[in-house]
Image (cartoon, rainbow, N blue to C red):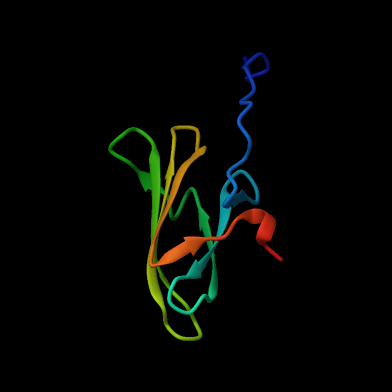
Length: 100
């Protein structure tokens, strides 16, 4: 009832994706070519879609504003929106401890 007796998940939070609240996530990436930082903000309701494996996936093309570097980010979630994997093509995810 209401999840009161549900076991808490003991896994640490994802080192790259930050959950601003229950619906909004943020991710920062650095482009491989020139090293420009790009911040992505995405929501469960608008940007994340169902995956064939039963979880969720977020895919986004990234273009930096300064030199127009291109890349693509894929974030995979399980059924409870826990981040399973962050994949970057042409970009590298920035760890949350390095955010300024």
